Amino acid sequence: MKTHTAESMTHLATPSYESLFSSSIELVNQALERYLDQRAYDPSSQASGLWDAMRYGTLDGGKRIRSVLALEACQACGGDIESILPTACAIEMVHAQSLIHDDLPCMDNDDMRRGKPSVHKAFGESTAVLAGDALIALAFGLIAKETRLSEKATPRQLLSVIGDFSDVTSVQGLVNGQFVDILYEGQPFTPDILEYIHTFKTGALFRFSLRAGAKLAGAPDAVVERFTALGEKLGLAFQIVDDLLDIDSSSETLGKTAGKDQLQKKATYPAFFGGETSRQQVAQLTQDALGLLEETAGMPPGYDSSHLKTLVAFIANRLH
Ligand code: GRG
Image (tube, rainbow, N blue to C red):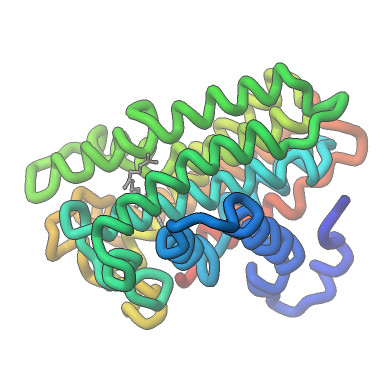
């Protein structure tokens, strides 16, 4: 099922990401709403306050860029949207969890997220920790229990995706990046350290999103690796732009506190290379990503990369 057509894209003057991908975003939002419905799991639960915090941190806000990338990757590789949707929601749950924990006073300590008080500000610190914990476990369950298997999305592929998800959520993924990010706060750092932090802290989830999309479409290994490389390029570009926006944008536009990286002496691309070189790096990563999308080997007949190319452009040029 295609959620929008290439034709509709060309007819819009300068369409925003939100308008162009509104059906995919809506699909993810509706599924998340279902999966985070306490009544569906445990109507007599005493933990309503925990469900509320999980819903507050995940729903109502967020660009959904990672889940949209997963949906688009799966469709570009000839897969069905129903096979990737639970994984796309799991990606958003873990992303939300990472933001909830990142905002805690013991981590990056931010009172604002997605234009509203951070989860620990609205619900208290212990609830914020537990809401994040529950989201990770729920995300694994979603992929395992809700993925629609097919000739393309086989049990073998599903197990492999769950294995990859474990890497992303563990010390081989986001946790690693966050640890090293905090380790280097206020410390001298090298470009290698910078790339390391960004690759794990942000790149891992982008990498997983594109890889899982290709895997659950039953794509051949070479395509899965190509989409993995695409995710690496996009994740790095996304984080460099994030670092630039932290300097150039306002808290109001970003929905989170701007200007914090400098205050906290974070290891960022603009801090090391300056704004201009950082922007050139984004441009190079964008070119690399577009090049990977030009490759047609192993792709299904009628392969259309236009949606993914639009997402690449959005990542490079985003303003929030
Ligand atoms: C996954 C087990 C586990 C732990 C997480 C706290 C932590 C460990 C990692 C923090 C990672 C982090 C906060 C990375 C920053 C990534 C980033 C650029 C976030 C902003 O993403 P957007 O702009 O946010 O897509 P929205 O709000 O639009 O969804």
